[in-house]
Image (cartoon, rainbow, N blue to C red; front, side):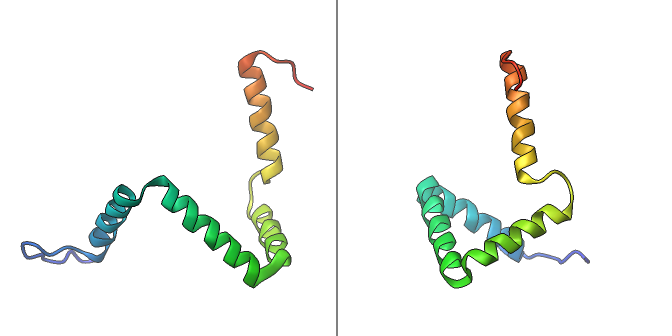
Length: 88
């Protein structure tokens, strides 16, 4: 992408978005993001239903790498080793 000449005071869309995101984080805090995430999840559930989550869960496992349950199991085993607990 060719570099654009910028006049003093001009910024790219990317720079403006980054600046806006930082400002939102500073003014609203962690709870704001929890709230909008919860609302978004509820809305997605209402509009798409249970089958949607099943479908995207299967697709996620097909992409590659360990599936979520496998990764969790590995992390639990790693944590047990780190604390000296025996593996089951």
